[in-house]
Picture (cartoon, rainbow, N blue to C red):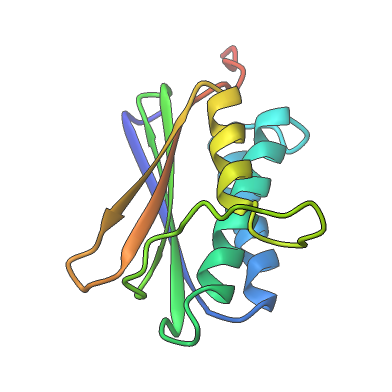
Length: 144
């Protein structure tokens, strides 16, 4: 496998795009050697689903699109970023027991940590932000 691989897709900020983002990530992971039924694939799909939902729901119409970027470095580290053009950073909200939302970033941070990864948020040069997840690559080594 190459030392560095990248993939990217830009989707409209529409609720229907969340499932498109999940499918895209699953397809890329499979192309890079991660089995579709691997626990890591499920975790990444859930993380991307939460990040894409945030990009659609919390930008209040100020980001017409969002982008999912993926990179794999030397079969060691998977990085996934979701970028939107809204300047407001995600916040960890105090979620009440009865509240239906507000836990997404907590879920994402916990999932990343359970996999030995991390979460970061970086501004873009256009005034938006990218929420990045870095995870160790755990695809089984394929024997040739």
